[in-house]
Length: 456
Image (tube, rainbow, N blue to C red; front, side):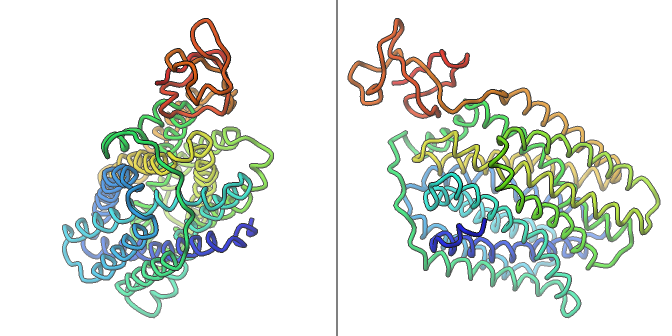
């Protein structure tokens, strides 16, 4: 898996991502403790609202960035957003009111919503070979796991020496270092983007791409299943640890680290596993495991706290991390398979926005349910959401899902460049190729290999 780091461009981009995410992980721990200091027992509600605001920023900003990404040099855009995030992180230690937390979280995450889809769309251009790209996806998953594993461990160590406010300084340094690394990287020239209208039309195309492609609709349903399970980890861990178990602040880092450990172990195994099994074969069983694990959370939190239940929660958090990683990591492969190269920025921006709309639902649900109904009820409700979403994904994503599809173009004129290998048919021109939604293929074939696809 580490062989992809021989590519100097990818190595610098991966390092930039890793250091930024380490900083983000420090901010996650610090923000949880800041919310606890400001709101006390209502910390889960405050944190759930703050994370919902984060999702609003993601949902609103990412499609617009995907629409204009072709007009702004990618390196310039990524550096500018990194510097913006560094500035916002530097201001967080001075927050004393809940509304200030909400405002700064929105600004920070709006910048992240601009950075992440552009970064994701750049990687398949840097590593065009499928094997290398699969390894890069696992490496990217490992980088995200640093936010859940290494960062909490580092935060726990730092909290023994300083107050949590200083953790935000580490976040600032991480974003600044990411900006410097991206600035020093020469990125490949992007594929030319075919004209598709204005910014609104380009933003809407990404959403239409997901709606029109069955495997991408299923991917969105799986994102909801992951969001339901992940929300209880990211929103309710601080209250679970501090109030239910009565453990110190450093134990919050330990619990989040258990989630990261499960995710990281799975990411390390995935490149070899994905050479043997299809994405769907791996992702669906992992998603079906999530409601089972959430039912276990409900059972454990219904009992009196003790050493055995604390160990059980750590194991359960690790299991959630493992299952979420098995669902999320192959997602980039599914998007790449379903998208033309020129449309990758729009596709990743749409996925970023649509998947985070799932978190927009589950974050406040996890926060307000925990504050009002308790952790067992919260786990059961989120488990039901996860089960329904996974069942929907299994129904939407066909078990037989070939990339090459035979289809007919009834509207394209003879001699059109797209019909170079087509043959006449009763209702138009028939040919087969790797099928994706684009300006020549507006709809997904309805019945296997003989369906009609209208283009213009």
